[in-house]
Length: 284
Image 1 (cartoon, rainbow, N blue to C red):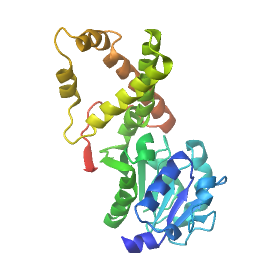
Image 2 (image 1 turned 90 degrees about the vertical axis):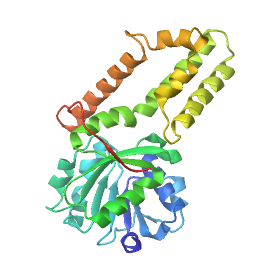
Image 3 (image 1 turned 120 degrees about the vertical axis):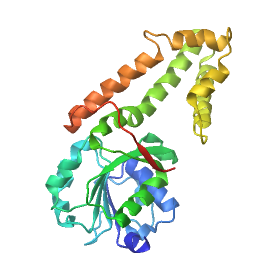
């Protein structure tokens, strides 16, 4: 692994997610002078990272090139990377909605490519990252990928790329739905008479506390819900509205995730995904 790391880690794009990755790599002990970052507008934080190569030429044979640009910039950054194809360098994309086939078209045959979808909690080391690879990554390249991406959370290997639109809609966009729910809780408290700052604090800390419970090993969301819902009690009265057959939370979430998945599939150019596939958690 050290030999792979010493060959160089190249990061293209150091925005929100790229910075989360770089910050975690450095905290995990990866030497700053092995990291090469290409970004047209490096942030003050990035320029303050002593030892990191910023907009310097990439090594001739880096171990990995991580593409963390905005999706609309991917096709622009790929052509200059073509010389790194062929097998020695792993190409890792975390650019949303860009299929593996796009990268295979831009690199020579035999190029190892992994497409990964980390979500926003990567910024606090609590991401869930779904990924899929073509047939070319070698075992040591897969191990390098796991080392780099497990720095920001857990990994789930997908059985097929056509499931990634659903993953993107659920876990990729999911934090936004949770934030919206916290906003809705706060708004409800305010409308019912709580002071605004108190409604906000209660909503935020309730969502955060429930999240910590769910992050425990062997956590059971259904079990937690049943345990806190006493028959005839306050929670049950609310849950009768929350879990209503029509216009309740389950129907709303299904429609939300489906709409996002359809849009992601359109952007990816992938077919509509099948309904059932098994996933494999490879690292916690």
